[in-house]
Length: 312
Length: 227
Image 1 (tube, each protein chain N blue to C red):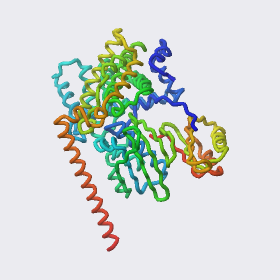
Image 2 (cartoon, one colour):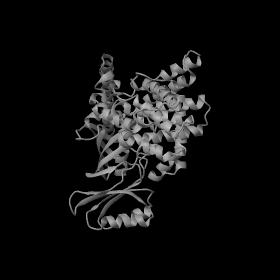
Image 3 (cartoon, rainbow over the protein chains, first blue to last red):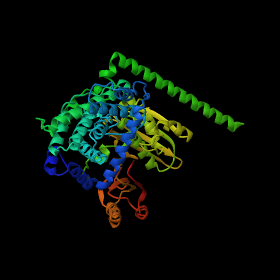
Image 4 (cartoon, rainbow over the protein chains, first blue to last red):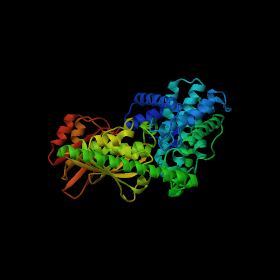
């Protein structure tokens, strides 16, 4: 078993990082490497579909978001964006995935649904802009998953456990390592890309308005997709994290424990308890209660009808 | 007693699952918990009662956990696009659904106890959705355990007596199947007992029949990976 990032670096030597992860997973879970690759090919396709659907826009369950990917895509196609195409596409794709997620569409949790736009945003944009073979993207998903699985040895990957650093932070670290891999970086560079990304998300809280995966989650995915690309860029140029990745993960766990409960997905702090956040939260609660009352009335009516049809 | 080596989360667990949004712990994980209850009941449910630990009770509706829990309990998978319609489907199937809050003690925030009843049987599980769609069921029909649904698993309900473990493991060994982990618990010596055996590869019906035919075995349930 790969026990830590230090162990990973030693174990990998000069070998292909995806192969190292595939071998380790095969030993541990008795799932052959080609099956893992096949599953990830399908997941890449789901991500692609999800991006395409998401670009069309729509409304989220809580009606707070849903059109962000479409707006940016329209601006991009009209030549009205000022950033470079790779960055803009990473943002469009991350927003599109999160739009679909907010409508209960089919997505790939990477590593979670709430952070599910970061990895596809980074990887699919890079694949397209740099004309990378999709098969390399699939192997980069192995690297992303492998990095996440080492983090998951010591940390629960959920906002409830440690705030958004445990979700979007981890996703940007996974994506950064994968991008470094796709660009031909070394294992050491992938690990440092992950370290630089994760380190700079520490302390990020999970304070969703109304408890929904909508605000700030959707836009945050776009911003942290770019964050991950930046981290990979630094690492590929030889910039290294002074604090080793394993120690950053430890720090993340400690910070997560120190976070008050109100900032761990409970919607009882931060943005959720701003004036606007509370107003939206109250509206959502009222709407949910109304829906519940409607359903109960409907059930009552159906039961009454059944009774009448039996007695007649 | 327990023989376990804790396993690392797999690559496919991290880069997945493919699921209906919006939250892996509130939608995918809860759907899987519902599905575990349905698989253990092993027949169509007539009534399902979900007891939500208060933090989950506070957040479940906005994340569609109610659709997901119900969807899982009527047999839908986490990537089934019908999950948003699950409550309506359950009503059409005449399943009586109840949600309430219950303090489940010192457990993960996203924890639920599920009582599920069919025409001839009933089952009860308690479990947590710990993030990314990963679950940990820690109680099955009153027995302490740790079930993650990530490998084929044999659940054995039996009367406690010496030799039980060796007889069961002998049958599994003769099938050429490797045991990943095994744990037992019992309510009292010589009384109701429970064994959970996670295996590396699927078990044949013939092996299950042999295990079911063993003296003092009340019930042997075989669960595949919970999708």
